[in-house]
Amino acid sequence: MKIGVIMGGISSEREVSLKTGQEMINHLDRSRYEVVPIIVKQREDLIEQVQRAGIEFALLALHGQYGEDGTVQGALETLGIPYTGSGILASSLCMNKQLSKMLLKAAGVHTPAGFYWQDVYDPQAVEQLGYPVIVKPNLGGSSIGIQLVHNEKELLSAVQEARRLGQGILIEPYLKGTELTCAILDGEALPIIGIRSAHSEWFDYRAKYEDGGAEEKVIQLPPVTQQRVREAALASYRVLQCKVYARVDVILCQDMPYVLEVNTLPGMTANSLFPKSAAAAGMTYTHLLDRIIASSLHERKQEWGNHC
Image: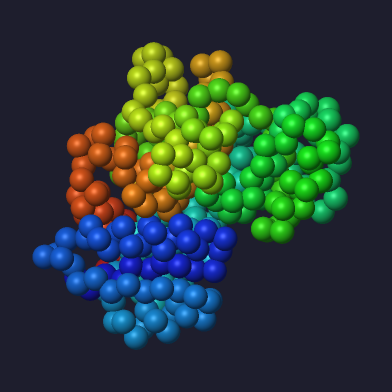
């Protein structure tokens, strides 16, 4: 099967996407797939490159806006080319942190409180929330533009940075606890990984992508707590209508899991969490890609009928 690995893109996560794409290319089974790298540099590139390459299937290595938000999925559906991961709706919902948080709360999933502002923010409301707080752009990932703020003096620059990266900002209380991530494949939770940053108080960009930036290993939780985390992750996956695979990021605070966000195209670099969780479940990177491709083909056939 002729597979296009689509990577790059125009979001702030372009560099991470290129690393994810290269890692995928390195591990795809050449006896099963003919692999074509497709590097997107601007919006207009995608359709032209995909058509020129004549691919039968798209392996998405994109992250962030115009990649993880449903737009590329929509373009590929228009072209009739099946692709990996969640469909248009789930991709769009999970990219919008505020909307996904509202749906999770309505479904009874714990997620941090806080405020969402599209235009003017209110420092006094933040004061009532209590410092420290986390300031983040409503759209985007890889911890880009997210800052831990300890007082009002630091607030303005953090808000300006988050605003620069997208529409709307979220300000949430900083929940001090154990950072966890729960990878989900085909609706089943893989081993939960605990994260301890080597350089900072929380799991920031450096911790995620620098060698030795964080200690990330399968965590042994008390059975009741582990069940709570798995249930929260799986409920989030179902409520937001994710398909094939996703990664749910959680903070465990006083034995209660709070869902931070759901990633529909989680990072797959050499340092990424999803492949580590799969490895703990006994899967090689190559086997993981085979599973994602096979499940995605099945999912698109379910959605599109015989047109896939």
